[in-house]
Length: 85
Image (cartoon, rainbow, N blue to C red; front, top):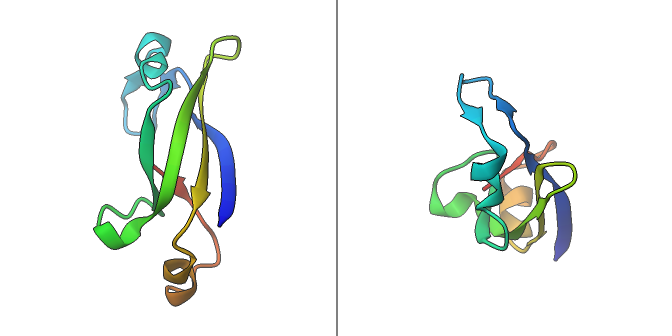
């Protein structure tokens, strides 16, 4: 298993024009979500799970998780990983 962590979201206007408010992002705290490879919405794109953690001071929604399905990454010959939930 490979541990992964980082910032999932912060209050701002996204590239697709949506605005993410801090109050909405904070609702994700302590939720467990699927960890997906390169925004793949199929079942085979799920490579693990992550726990969402709200950082009140920075107003960031962070994630800590693990990548369990390493076979998919190797099979697809992925050189760059982009995680999404």
